[in-house]
Image 1 (cartoon, rainbow, N blue to C red):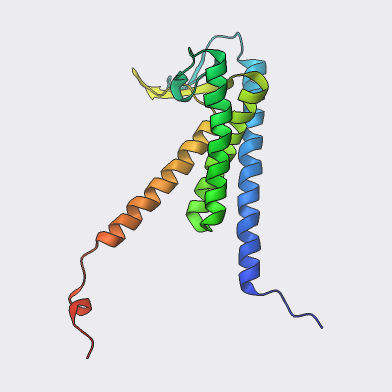
Image 2: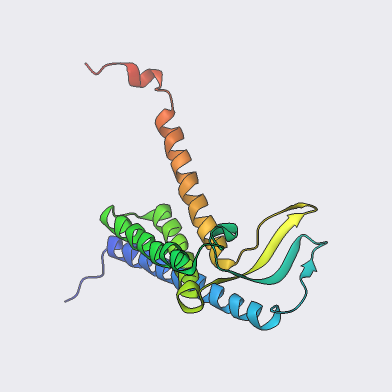
Length: 183
């Protein structure tokens, strides 16, 4: 006779399923939106929406964040942005497994890695990353980015929020009851 699965097994399975779905959805959404951008925006003028708050325009970014390093020689760019990024992603995943990250940190890392892998795929296959979204109000605007970049930034934001929250909990003053010694 078989006993039902334990609740902890179900929780682990559910958590892993959420992480896998997050990876597939992030990677898939980024691939689809980059394909749409390359087929509809390449060579076309920038399109503006919501009173110029959101702009869509096609850019191939050979550099890193905000185009940094785009003017480096190709071999150095490849070493830094393709090989270096690949190694960094492997180290992050390995560290997460070794430290047994769970919960929000694991979800944040999943977003960060899924976005990083999608951009890494572009660099390895095309030598550059397709960026196409820009937001802002008036002269205050972001750089041009893509869905993978949003996943990376969201993952970093979740990790930072968790660290600030953890730091605030550790800095809480002790309550008077905790200062009374046990008899």
